[in-house]
Amino acid sequence: MFDAIALLNLPSLVGAASVDFSWLIEKVSLATWETIYMVIISTALAYVMGLPLGVILVITEKGHILENIPLNSILGVIVNVFRSIPFIIFLILVIPLTKLIVGGFIGTVASMVPLTLAAVPFVARLVETSLKEIDWGLIEAALSMGANAWQIITKVLLPEASPSLILGVAITTINLVSYSAMAGIVGGGGLGTLAYYYGYQRYQTLILLITVVILVIMVQGVQVLGDTLAARAVNRRR
Image 1 (tube, rainbow, N blue to C red):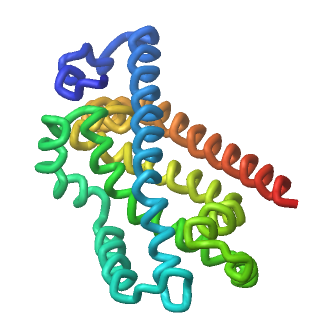
Image 2: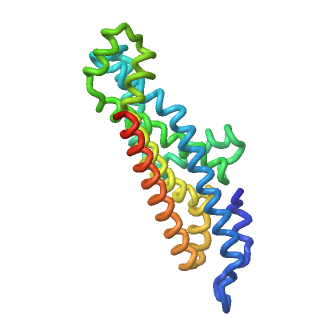
Image 3: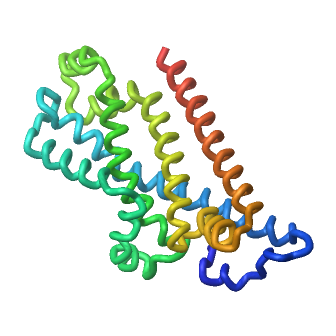
C-alpha cells in the first residue's frame, strides 16, 4: 500500500533535466490502484450498513408498513448530524476510532474507516429517497395479498427501486473518489497523497495534472456505468 512517509524519501523530480517517466508511471499506477481499491471497498461497506438504515427510515415513517415514529425520528437526527460534518473534519474526528480498528491512521486501509463511516448516512438518504419514489399502490396491493414486511421489502420496494438504487451507488462512488483525494492530505494513500506531497508541496504541476485527469476519467467511467446498469434495470422491469 501507498506509504506517505516513504513517499517523502523518494527522488524528487524538481530540477531534473528530464522527467523520469518510469518512476512517474510506477507511482501513478500504484496510487490509481489504491484509490480504486479503497473506494470500491468503502462503497461496498457503506451499502452494507447504509442500505438497511435507509430501508428502516422508510418503513418506520408515519403510515408505512412498520410505523415507528420515535425510532424514525432518532435515526433521522443521527443521520442528519453525521451528514452535516464536513469530511475533512470528520476525517480528523475519527482518527481514534481508526487507530482502534486498524492500528493506525495513515495509509489506504486506514482511510477506508472514515470513508465508509462518512458514506453511510449519505447512502441511507439516497436509499430513502429511492424507496419513497415507489407508488404506494404497489405496496397496498402486496399487503392485500397477505405479504409480510420482509416480503414487501424484498419483493416490492428494492426491486421496484433498483434503477434509482443503482444510480445511488454511482453517486456514492463518485463522492468517495473525491473524499479519497481529501484523505490524501493526512497520508491516506492513493492519488490524493501523490498529488498533495508531490503535486502541491513540491510544485510538480505534471503530477497534479495527471491526477486530475485520472480522477475525471474515474468519475466519468462510474457515471456511465451507473447510467447503463440503471437503464438495463428499467428495461428488465418492463
